[in-house]
Image 1 (spheres, rainbow over the protein chains, first blue to last red):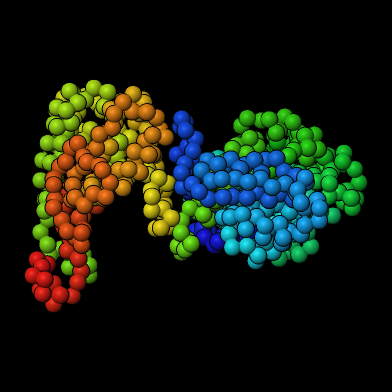
Image 2 (cartoon, rainbow over the protein chains, first blue to last red; image 1 turned 120 degrees about the vertical axis):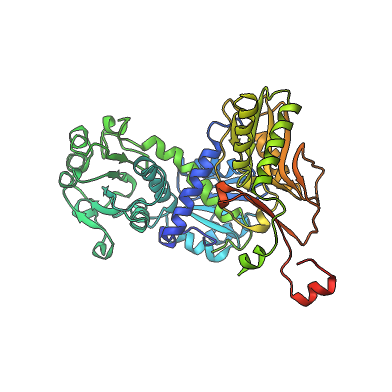
Amino acid sequence: MNRHLLSAADLGREEALRILDTAEHLDRALSGREVKKLPPLRGRTVVNLFYEDSTRTRTSFELAAKRLSADVVNFAAKGSSVSKGESLKDTALTLEAMGADAVVIRHSYSGAAHRLATWVQGSVVNAGDGTHEHPTQALLDAFTIRRRLRGATGDLDGLRVAIVGDVLHSRVARSNVLLLTTLGARVTLVAPPTLVPRGVADWPVGCVFDLDSVLADTDVVMMLRVQRERMAGGFFPSAREYSRRYGLDARRMAMLGDTAIVMHPGPMNRGMEIAAEVADDPKRSTIVEQVTNGVSVRMAVLYLLLGGSEQLGD
Amino acid sequence: MAEAARGAAAPILMAADVTRVIDRMAHQILEKTHGGADVALIGIPTRGVPLAARLADRIGVFENVGLPVGRLDITLYRDDLRLRGIRPLAETVEPDGGVTDRLIILVDDVLFSGRTVRAALDALRDLGRPRAVQLAVLVDRGHRELPIRADYVGKNLPTSLRQTVRVLLTETDGRDAVFIDEPRVPADETSARGGTA
C-alpha cells in the first residue's frame, strides 16, 4: 500500500482485497469483546482535518483511530484559525509540527488531499475532496456488498451494481466506479442527462437514463444523495419530478430480484431519492450496516498505513 | 535447494515421538489441573492452534472430558510490529464459554524469546479475566528475553542462537517432525568452528 490513500484509483485488486480482508479480521477481533480496543497504533497521532461539515465520516475515522489506540485530534475549520484566514498549507504544516502521523482530510475543493500529500511527511487519507473522490466510502461499500452477497471473501466478480442519482456532483459515485470495477463488478450509472458527468463514455461503466429499466437485472442499487447544497444550477425541474423519476420507492423496490440490496451513503433525504419504507426495509437496506462497516474499513486503512514500519511491503 | 540442504539432518523428534510427547503433555495437564475442570486451551497461530486441538483431543480420550478450545491472534499485540512491518492478521476464536474465571492454557509450538507469550498475555487480557494462565509448548529452546517459563514442556532443546528450530505438524505441513536447522554458512567456516552441519 502507498503512504497515502488519496484515490480509489490508487488501489489495485490485491491491495483493495487486502484492506477488505484486514477489515474483516479487525471487525471479528473486536466483536463481542469486553475491551473494544486494539493496541497497534499506540503512540501514533491522527488528525481529523475537516473543512466541510460531516458527522458520520469524522466520527467514523475518530472511532477507528481510537479503537486502534491512536491519539486523535479533531480539527474543524469552523472556530479555528482557518476562519482567521490561515491557508490549508499553513494549517497542515502547523499540525505536522505538532507531530501528526496521519492527516484525514475532508475539503470542499477537489484535489485538496493530493495537494496536502505534497506538503506533509505523514500519511494523508482523503475523506472526501469536493466532487472528486471519497475512497474510504467506496471501500466500506465494497465491504458491505461482499459481506451481503459474497460471504465476506473474494472479489465482486460479475455483480451488477446500479449507481443512481446525482453522479455529476458525487465523489461517492466516482470512487465507487473505480473501486467496484477494479474488484470485478459491472457498474451502471442511472441519472438524469443533466447530472451525468462529461467524459462518462471513457469510464468503464454503462449509463442509462431510465431507472425502471435496470432494476430487474441488478444485484446492488446504490442511491446517491441529492445534494441540495450543490443544486444552484437547476439540474432538474423540481424535487417532485426528480423523486418520481429517480427516487427508489416501494413500487420500484418490488421490481428488484430476490437477493438484491439497497445502499445509501447517507445522509438521506427521505422521501426524495429514497422512500422511508425502502430505507427501513430490513431485508434489502444496508444503510445502518454501512455505517458500522465504515469503522472497520477505516481501522484497516489506518492500520495498513500506520501500523508497520516506513516500508509497507509490496 | 534449502529444503534439500536441510533434509540432510535427521529430525530431533519423529512423528511417533511427537505423538508420545503430546500424550504425555495431555496427562500432565490432567494431573496438574485435577482432571481439567474449568480449563480451556487457547492455541497461538500458526502451529499452536492444531497443537491445542490435539491436546484437547487426547485429554478427551484419556479422561472423557471435552475441553473448550480457542485460538488467539497476537499480531496486533507484538512489540516488533513497527520494526517488522505489516503482517496478515489471523482469526481469533474465543473458547466456548469465554475466558473469564477460567484456567486458560496457552499453547504454542516453540518457546524462544518469550515475546510471543507476552503478546498473548496482553491479547488475553482484552478478552476477559482468566482465573489463571498457564503455558504449554511442544519445544522449549531457551534464550528467554523476558521472565516467562512454561508449565508444560514437550521437549527441552538446548540450542545456539544461530540455530533454527523447525516444527512440522500434519495439519499445517503434512507430517509431524521437529528439526534443528544449522545456520547456512560456507563449509570452510563451519569446519573451522568444528560445527556439526
